[in-house]
Image 1 (tube, rainbow, N blue to C red):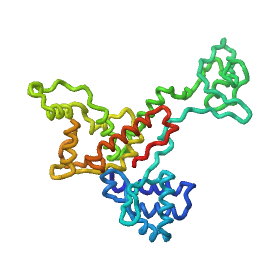
Image 2: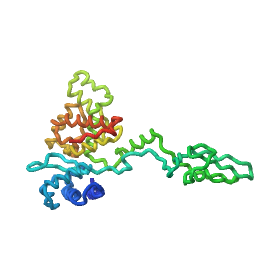
Image 3: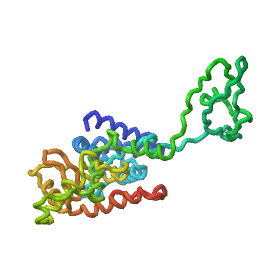
Length: 346
């Protein structure tokens, strides 16, 4: 993430807040503005996440109101889906704010095509193009007409740019120029388009969300494993078997963002709980994660000093984090997930 990207996305988030008509154009929007002034640029560059931790007192002083008013404004920003918080806040307690950038409506889903009906009439269905019947030389062809339910032979539907050529009389000597009409995508094609635009190819995928996607792949278990080396077959020590699984069970899992079937909202919901760790033996955090992953037989990227994202709960809280991730993915994949509230990340 670059510095220009930081400024652009920060302003995008502020525009999102100011465009929310449910927010008072006073306290709530001012609180959001001063929270954004405290966003940690380095954390954004490392993880792609906007985070800040100013106290209620600091925000109240900037906005010119009481701490109780700031607390209510933060609650409203959370309820409207602009903020997440971590911690309890208050005296001697740190409250971390995370900005949520909502997806544009066009990226949320490909809506079912709808036909617009004129007032008091039935909608005109999409027409399927058919060749205009040929007429004897020197005569005009008979135009095809369509009823409102799509049958031939009735009164024509109101002319529009898509069916205009079908309701015009075409000269017999001239070839009809019928422009192909865009047809609605079939359900399978629509699903494929959704999957292709679900986040894997977007530059907006943050490193923290990619780290959650990798964990989602790891909890599914390894793929087919090749036979272990002869020395491991002769002496199948558990640590050797785990190393073999880690080396061959998840090919290119870090390069391909975990190879998910489709991008899940849970990846971004839990991205706020990921923290960057330097992949170096000099890092105590890295060594702790290496030990935890080796015990599970999970792969790790090479130790080249790059940043790798892990849950901020540490190895001791990994089981709880994975349970919440697995539950969130099941809820999201459920056919009735549209009627179920998504689980809060924390």
